Length: 527
Image 1 (tube, rainbow, N blue to C red):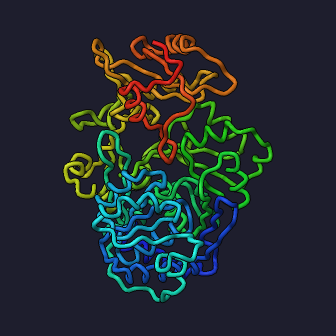
Image 2: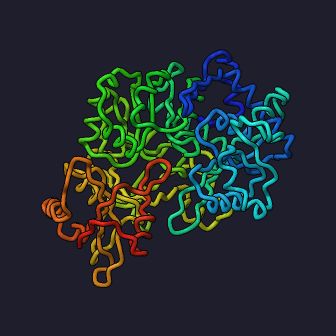
Image 3: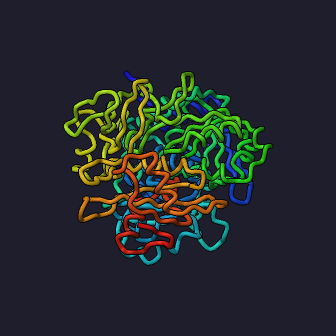
């Protein structure tokens, strides 16, 4: 037996509800700064009742139910209610367009949709083209003309008895869609065992205790909030504070008000917080650790830790790895310009195109050893070819390049698709971005490869300047020439006011490539 055992989301909740029935499990603050609270016992009761509601609507084991919700208590209750009856949650981004949602609903064959009234118009035109969808339920509905769809009323009227369902740990509990770049999004199948495993690994990696309170400001539909925050809290019987959305100006004030002790951010939110007018009172906060992903500069890490008196830990994970295979050690030397060392339960290496492990210092693809359906994703839904490409002989091929340093830490290089091939040389976009980001006038930079008839690809940099700086493209190019080999220096720079982003702050480079291809260029470009 491994650390997961035979546990499922339901048995884990039952155990913690029995141990901590009257203890606060969830604190939620909505956009109007109204606070709502559920104890472990109250949460379990709501889950039981909603499970009965789903069964009454004919939702069966193995069927998909789409959640199109912002951060809210109803998201958490729906997630565990679906897991209780063996159904599969499909969480989606509320910023997704009508076309994107039509694809997900059809591809997942979802039989039920849970959303809010303000998003209903997104599904009106497509309803006739959604043959699997049987009903739409409304969360946080405050009207009186949606009888039969109001989740609050349905839960209140439902029986509190726990449905008896046979659930296996390797049954799929959720399907998370990855961002599409050159193709449609893929549905990553996540099992009950996956959730339990990542909760165990994350709680051990950050030394989480029942007295801790996770702070979730990132979207719940994303793996980060589910895997690392929610599941680690449940595994140890801790509590969770959730805000409806991230606020850079209120982040530490909310953390203090809600009593949070550990948090999770991406690089973009860290930069957004640093860009706010500094309030020295924010030093007096309750957070002891914040883990983060994606690239920030050493100066930004230092400034953040000094301003807010909280330690940062850079880590690496993806929807498909489920857990965090790499992380800076909480009790060891933190090197936050690295993505850390292998964590408990994982073996990680860097390989060449033939799958052979590379020596220290050489860049190659990150591969992670694990068991599909337990420590790695089970696979991609209805996509055996993509599954076979990603999962090979017990190793997950991540599509990310890194190198291992002499110190044993892993250093991120770039996404494989972000490697630029320029006149026979491989250029990591991340390396060029890092140099540009060190310029005092640059707030953020993104680098892409664009077609070039002579050199295969040319290097194009997009730059967002700091508000109080006026920097020319030539000045930035000269700055790069002094710090990069000639073949790595950008061929052109375009200044833009902001980057297109995913819901968790990742720059959407495919949008930048598309804009370039379509000739939709901003002012300020130089060549």
